[in-house]
Amino acid sequence: MHKIKGFTLIEVLIIVAIIGILILFALVQYNRHMTKTKMLEVIGAARIAQLAVTEAAISEKDLTAVTASNIGYQFSNNSHKYISNLTIEDYTGVITVTTNSPSATGTLVLHQV
Image 1: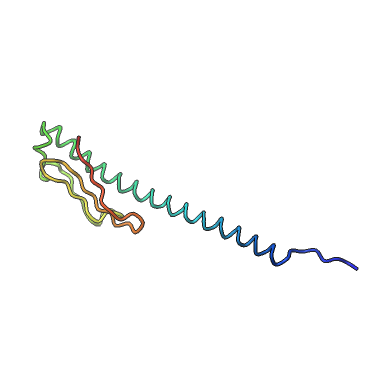
Image 2 (image 1 turned 45 degrees about the horizontal axis):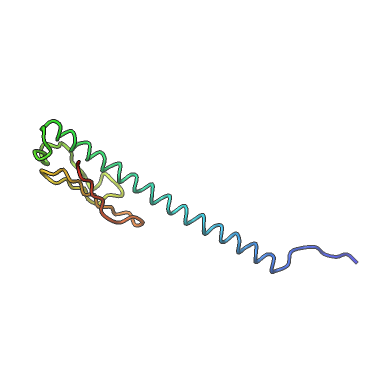
């Protein structure tokens, strides 16, 4: 008599469970990576505004003289996928960025030093 070799149902279920756990871990790591990437894009856009405020403060010789009219920076809501609003306060240069990314919704505030 020939003995048939193969996997038992329990062995197959254990392998499927291990593969499922590995896929779940990979998806969690992928979502974290995508959130970090989106936030890096938001910070990059905020840095451009910060550079405009810095240049205006240098040309005006004082941060308290910086206003929206002399910064020369205009933010368009349609220009960035993950930012719903970006404002720059007059006379302080404080930049407030509101994100609309589902995985990273919130507000980022950059103060000028």
